[in-house]
Length: 436
Image (cartoon, rainbow, N blue to C red):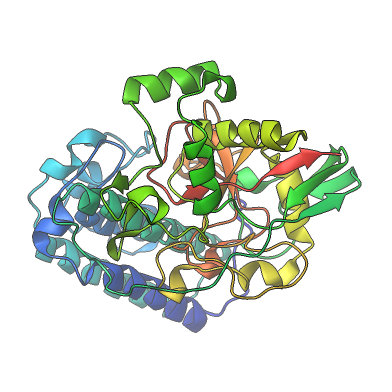
């Protein structure tokens, strides 16, 4: 396996990083009751208890089973119960039935976590081989992905409750006005894309390769709730001109009239009475914040509508255009947006004005026009971990950038997220592009 991990870290530094990531996951679950942690709101979402268990399964299955002398599982049945999709490991409990796993209880899952944590700590007191370091880093990156999934799945669950429960009481978050939309031109030419060099990367970010870009421009910031309201007020959800055929069929079949979690019922004089559900409860629409919880179908329709409004060749950016622009930001990619560490748990307008690209990292994952496909020369990792990304390279679209629920250090310019065209329970938004 070639994960290009943080293998330069000492055993003590790895142990410290392991403890920090594992503690962060428990902290995210801390405000929840056992009932909150048990329920599965739809087949694509998993209960919080399952997330806590699955990431522990990963460390036990891929690290302890391989490297611990005299390995014995905490509970033999957990190997199947909390396997997600690794066929190379064995059978899996049906995904849509994860909410039916009432036993083990939350206390036993936490006891399993503590047991595995103690055994990993013992393992890190010895010599840390290159292979162990690779797998440990992969497990930590995997857990950070599940920290965001825990929050997105929890938000979907709480939104089903008519009491509009609050997970994190902190509202309003900001009164900042969104920066004016500006276009930043790129002359095109040859670009170097994909991960190369030191530091961790998933296999789907490799190998580094050349790409040819046509002249184009990117919007300086994501599309806002206010701009989305204009699309809706102009009949955007009722006009098939803006929609792909499959998207229009999806919209009609599902009776989609607004982004996920939007409801009318507020003051009609304030943004048409629209409200949206957040992890802070149900709140009025803030027109200055990046729009969130939209599908690729909706993002593409908005871009087509905006092209007609402005009379310009506006569209979604390709992932090559997006990554080339993000590379120019360097470390600013990790400082200009809101990530999990900010505690906002909702996309925010950027408080800092000035020229240049804004919020390329954090706030909302940005849909691109690119299908999720392998890069030229791509090779999945060897063994069962090779199932991590490669087998999903069909019928998915790429998102870039990260969100308000993504750990800051988890991201880089080459990071590729991916979901089906109709998915919208993730923190997904969009940034516009246009041909020059």
